[in-house]
Image (cartoon, rainbow, N blue to C red; front, top):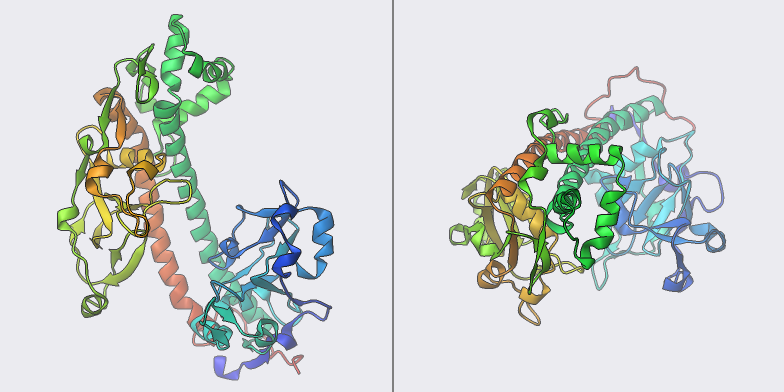
Length: 476
């Protein structure tokens, strides 16, 4: 049990090689002009998520520059810890990481552990536990930019409980299995959303079915759409089959429902017409406003002060702000599927697109997010995909405090394809979104289970289901 476990400092548990604990390079050693299109990725705080390194969104250095920064390189099974900025982040580079070698940024440090003494995945989980975070942040300063004072020295002194290696590996396996399932579900949801986005772009941005119909009928293609028409002409049978899958959506089991849906191209026109506002659009489609296809429930919103929220605890009902869940309480004012769009404060991202949240079930929303649903033939999910593609910069007011009020939001132009196309689009994407909801709810359950087991396993309150080995007597 945990009371019998020895504790050892990370300094005692680090690998017996030079540079096993190393800081990222000073900012002056990595400049913007050092970045290249591909090469050795630089690990930043945004790549540390959920205990495992998140691939993607990397800056890259050339092999030569990476070798110049050799002391800041990290490899598979190394821990990466943020010591400046979003302190407390801890992740491990997994065995199946995309790259064999990385460089940590100036806000991170890496730790290579002695695997004869300790399992790095176990230490990774311990440092994410309540006790581990307390020890990690014991020397943190919140003055100015948050930072861990004398980071490399402070981290060396952190005490880690060291059960026998078989127990460490069992603990890491239990928690890792849950994390693997959570990550698999997250990737599946990203894929499902990507499929819905691709279908939206194909139908309502690139007008692929209209181009196909126009080509088949021998109708003229506007010059602006000619490059896309060439792409359509050269599509392979395999690519067309994939489009049929997109148009069919997926069912709750993740398989394709396309046998139940006919080819949607017959619902689209075979010609284009020019609109002064949007340029060439499918013939017969209308330019209306976002307010014409959405229902707004802002009047039902109720903001709560921190004190009021404390009075409604404990609870499991999410309390939403402009961009995220801010708290959990024991009451709700909404119980349905809604689209939230940030109203003030955090309104739009760097690319001009709005902050969006897709919510369902029992919820409470404050007055910093518009609460919306689709109406008539335009589904809430259709609105979501539409807004994801919009640059709302022209509709945002305020120099210091940005805001998109209801009037401006409702005036955003919306290209209406008509009931038949809109209904078919909703039929195509609804199964994907229902599957996404199921997977998201499963992840909530798995995350709660992992977070319940984490402190119990890493403190020894709960024995992992293995044969217990001998104490880690090698640790001096």
